[in-house]
Image (cartoon, rainbow over all chains, first blue to last red; front, top):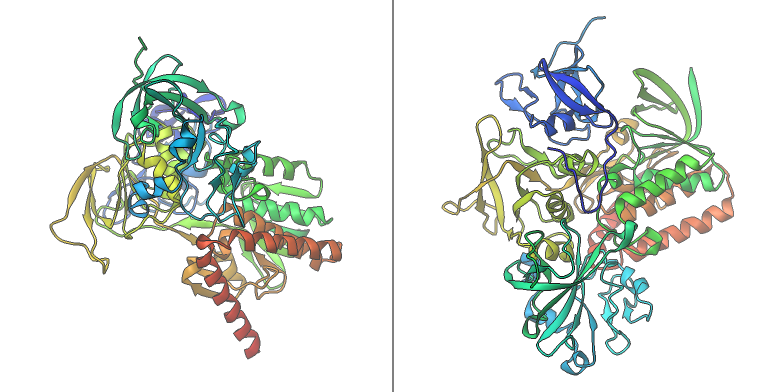
Length: 103
Length: 167
Length: 368
């Protein structure tokens, strides 16, 4: 859920765009990070741990901890908390450590 | 105890409360700031220089009650939102308590708001007499609430929302 | 291709921006590398008013201070800011490597100021990896930067300044705060922050910790319990707090990887909250030409981070030969400001830590 009115802040979200999460269309804004847009859509589970497949989500939201790794447009291990939304992006839950592309 | 639960004790409050004699003369500022931290914007906020933080900025603020005229300029400037203005001469039965407020929705003058004490307990519904905006940069509102005189030193906040229309 | 820089500032938060402005004011050319896509560091999330004195912009909201520092830096012809630029390493030949725009850049800097700040600590308890367990900073980023409601009902762990302030900000964002628990027997943050949340009805309970978190695929609640005077959990004191988000505000650790990698002498100093680089009165580390300022050299406050940044900036410019007399004066003024900020009870811990650091540095010199 996005905050519409705040006692102190005004939010410049940029332009509204749609992107894809596990194939599902999600609304986002160009000044938002993927993590924030997913959170606003109620999505907190971003992947699963490598060994025990436990659900994983954000922790630090600032690029330090690597808890939010997802696969974005085929590229694995993207820290979605510091990556902005782009129209048409394909964001997928990552299982474990992801596979680095060779190209 | 303040350091364990964030609630000033009766002794804490007494140490910054003016005399009944001073209260009988009109509104006065009460700085409920009890910890020595490096901070002094209150001294700059007061045009009458009635608040002192001396000898260095770690001291707690001391209000000179005789110089203070209770204008309330300091309320919206204190970073800790720790200063209140109490006017026990407001009416026969009521005191006016001015407090800082930074939540939505902002009440409207004439509505009734639920007054809370320092522990967040509800004390009753009181008329909102004054709503002063802090401006686009400050954004801290100053709310003037008319409370029964005996609650003048108790009401220190309002519940955000649920305001009732005044009679 | 190697890019030359006079002063390289690593980290564009309050300390870094002030270091850049200070060095530039004496004539040095400064390059700031900031990892995030906007500079400003933690200031971009701080909606509350800052403490301190006028010289540290007391009374202004952190967001406005941040905006002002960034605007001033951008307008300064002596300062260039590279965003989305992650510094990877600092090498003996003076080369600093940076990842920027998917390219691996090399910068040769004459002086380097490390102002990389800190990161949040974590707590160990069963269920601590459930979605919905966030650092307090994460919650701030979501609500104050992205404008996204981070939760419906939060339990806050930690009653230091961050725990208290973020609880207040959560309420401003329309989130219910179930309570604040603190393991220590007393509130560690400023008591005026505690009083603000208390009079909004949020309980603060000292002597409590998280026993475990539970939920099916996501956080649904937390079991808290009391601690005895030896910090051990007391059986039978468990309480169930339903919540969808648990916020950990249990302390910060300096982000010192670059200092370690560059070969700076490091020391574990409890009062400075962890491993920090040893620095002299110019905030220069034991590697000549590398300075450290702000939280990276000891967890403190934004106000002192800004002044330390200035001090390091003046020192770096001075060592390059820029206006030595003026630099000396400005350094002394900054040092005096720091002393003033630290002269009260809240500064005692920092001063104790700095003393330890100074004696370790002196011992090292003596051993040479």
